[in-house]
Length: 375
Image (cartoon, rainbow, N blue to C red; front, side, top):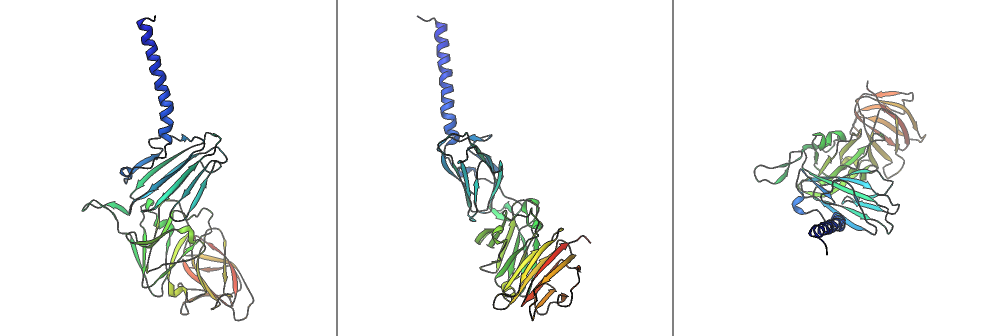
């Protein structure tokens, strides 16, 4: 028969055993349940994590599959930090947003990835592991943000929009904005463009390798009445035509971009088979224009310089009869002032001392080497 002290020790050891067993059993199951973010946690200026309450990446068991939803209400957006600890070659996290962007995250992907969930949309994070336990890990850190253009209205305590910059586009007009000036995280304002007709939007890509457009957004309409929301990267190589007379553009991070976004009335763009945009940079890059295709045999490019001084290093044009190739005042039209006529100007380099200008090509094609200069 055991002594009283021995019985007490046995009971204590038994309790410790069950506590350890319970932690081992309950801890992982709680951490790895496919539990969504509670609605009462979706609050501006508030952090949440997936798995809930995790302070670091959490191990994922084999044969695991769960799709986590990050949903944000109108007038709020979410910054999601994905901490990638995947180890298995077949383990995967698939991220899909409502702007039709699909990102596959694997063991070779970056260890930290950032995503932005636009207001009133949902982004899904599907976490899948295979049967072999490779001790993969992950964590999501979500911050709900009401940035400089979202605020708490003191009158009715609802989330509403601050006054973004509004610009009006005339019938024969051109407006452009450097993307850096549209970043709400850098205390800049979104831009609403209002025209008298549909609007053609183009990206004047600077050619700088670090320029990205994933976290700039184009809203067909405005924040309160959006018809469609797109990532600007969708229009890197093609124009977007608004469905109405209003477009809104906004950047949700503060990464530097040397490119610009250019707006023209649709009727202005329709004077050409193609009206695109091009940005210059401190390093020379190439502009190609083709005025040989289409019904009008007439194309134009709106050039936006980093400075008000662009140097044309060289021009190579086709030797077609009736070729018209000019650099003119923007927006391009028959009444635009001619800066350089390349039928008579054949020696280079040549300078254009305007931050914006247009190049028109009719019945021919050409390639330009352009560079922005400080002087």
